[in-house]
Image (tube, helix red, strand yellow):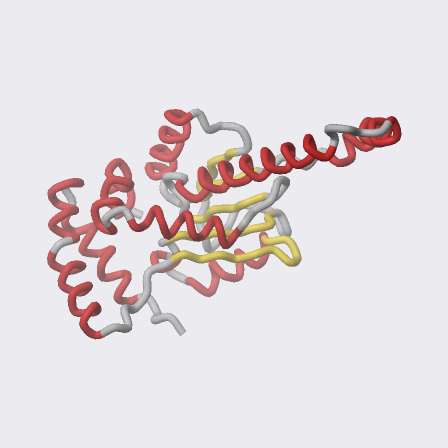
Length: 228
């Protein structure tokens, strides 16, 4: 908890510095794989600064606009029957509002996320909740999608967090995890290790004034199980 409390204010800047901005591409790829449709409810755990939730809401908004354009084109030359049917089913066909809930155990991370949301004018459909991944403060079967990006390796009891994700997901819901893992190419692995242990803590000290927290983050990646 203390690690992320210490780095919260510089968290996004450090993510850009450590990954050379590639983390943004990974998160965009996650959303394209997710391909959420209007009406979907997302729970983003360990989502502190809101990157996944913001992308989710923007993606859903773009899907809604695309659906509206398609509907408009199909109604350019409607018959009277089409118009009548449209009025009678308008309320029934209107999609439910999509919602994104950002859940994080760290209040400082959520605070930074809220500030980002305010700065870019995102408020509709977005909630912020302090909560532990191992004991989520939600009822059963509440969400269509559960995401956790670069956070599960910091959970003390991963099995318990996975059980909680299953509990809060609706039947047929999706669990999506974005995480670091082992570099399989031996040459790249040596370069990656050198960069991780020699450069990332230095960047942490220079940018965030915190060597120890970023030393921990590097070590947490190494301790996380390899990909299968």
